[in-house]
Length: 116
Image (tube, rainbow, N blue to C red; front, side, top):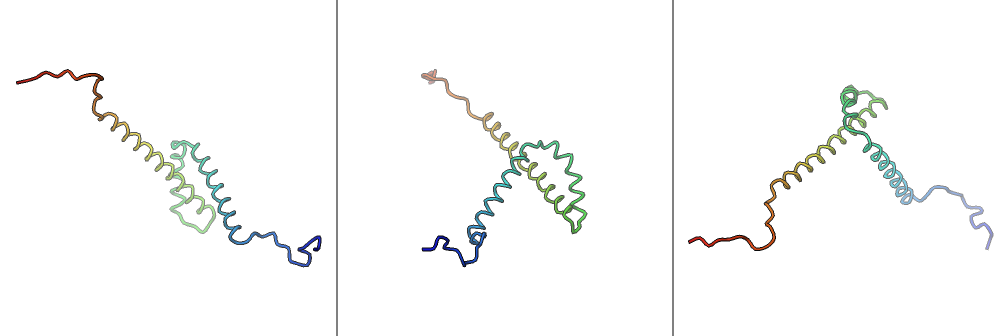
């Protein structure tokens, strides 16, 4: 058996397509996760000041990377707003449910009287 079995064969650094696709998707997912983590640390008030700027840039279409970025940034700002709105709505619903909960019965026998 030769010491180098691949001698005479083309050498390829490329992964088979299915493995390359899986690796690529994992890399994309990790990148998106890092982006989301960074965005979660930005407060909505800071983003709100940028909303008009990126809305205006987005409304003035051009075939440019700057326009594409403005669409992505505007969408991210709106996504944070939606996320916070959903969280606030859930908090309000839980508070309303807690406020309307029936009073708990005290332990022990109830104090009942026979009425005729």
